View 1 (cartoon, rainbow, N blue to C red):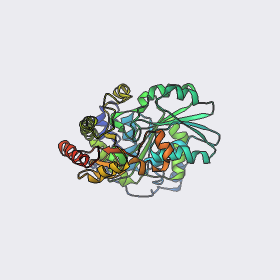
View 2 (view 1 turned 90 degrees about the horizontal axis):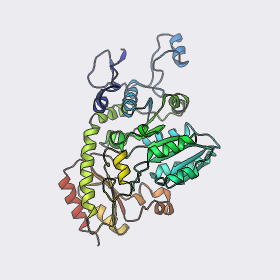
View 3 (view 1 turned 30 degrees about the vertical axis):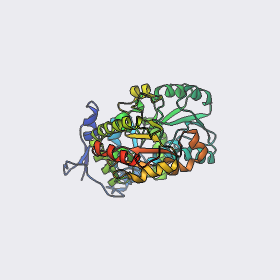
View 4 (view 1 turned 180 degrees about the vertical axis):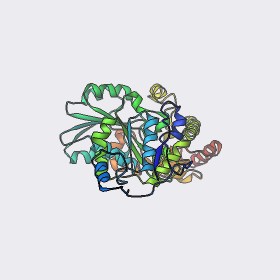
Amino acid sequence: MSVTKDKNFKNFKKQTQRIRGGLHRSSHGETSEAIFMNSGYVFKNAEEAEMRFAGKAKGYMYSRYGNPTVTMLEDRLALHDGAEACFATASGMSAVFASLMSILKSGDHVVSSRALFGSCHHIINQILPRYGISTELIEGTNLSQWEKYITPKTRCIFLETPSNPMMEIIDIRSVSEIAHKNNALVIVDNIFASPVLQNPIEYGADIVVYSGTKHIDGQGRSLGGAILSSKQLYEDNIKPFLRHTGPTLSPFNAWILLKGLETLKYRMNQHCKNAQRIANYLSIHPKIKKTIYPGLKNHPQYQLAQKQMSQPGSIVTFNLQDKKNAFKFINALEIFDISNNLGDTKSLATHPSTTTHRVIGEKARLDLNILEGTVRLSIGLEDIEDLIRDIDQALNKVAQ
């Protein structure tokens, strides 16, 4: 059975690319993408095996190196994001770690925004220094700090925008210009925005990482991640690192993410519509100390968000009086599930300081304005009136 690649959809609109891009059909002519659930491949003869392993002939060798179903996901994501290459990984965090370690060595320096997801913060602040890589965490929204802390040893900068969970927006274009002027690469964690709402490569990013678990799957079914880059970075750094360290995406999970891409735009449109309604509601509620959402005009980077993102996203964060009231609110919710995941069709609530950002410690949380009363909501696709009623009844149980 042979696998053939369908026509190139490079010149088609984004939504067509999400459904048709990277499609490879076998000789059976299947409509939906096939799942090649195999670990190895058979060669016609020893000479063909030699040629493939030497890189002198095209073809699959081992599913840790490549797999037809995974290739379809990689090709589709690269086409959609305007990247030259993509490597799919077993999880979003494996994508983050590999994007850094594939280009860093002992003696290098990394500058990162301090507003990071807990595990990303742990990698930058705890793991990289073990390998002799120095790091600097800065206020990412302050462009002068990027200028100040980049040194001749800075190999790359790392940032997430919007940030988790306080929704800081960083100017990707301006930071990329600063980095490139100093011969540093730019890695952007684009997980909160998804490929639909923001394409960092268009603003100068060199590497973009995703957790396919969030939004791309968006239905609580599958782990997965991806690293997008230029062809040169892919061939020289990312591919050899991932092939030999092995954070391989399952073909079945790749298939789930492929099907998720087909409906991603329409799900994101409704996610954002629901999130905006809830943010508007929370922003005027007397029991809410502060509501943080890039679609609110009082967001400190509102204008940048309008320029850099097509819509403000699915995440709304707000502050209650203290941890006791935050727990009381979360426990009173009837529709929202309590979960540290996000970007799901089901609405989810979490308490960042005891879950997603527990590992960074109290001081780091305070530096990021993550308080004991901070609650993060991932707004799903349920009826918006039901969601607002659920939030309202839960807030009725919270002290003023």
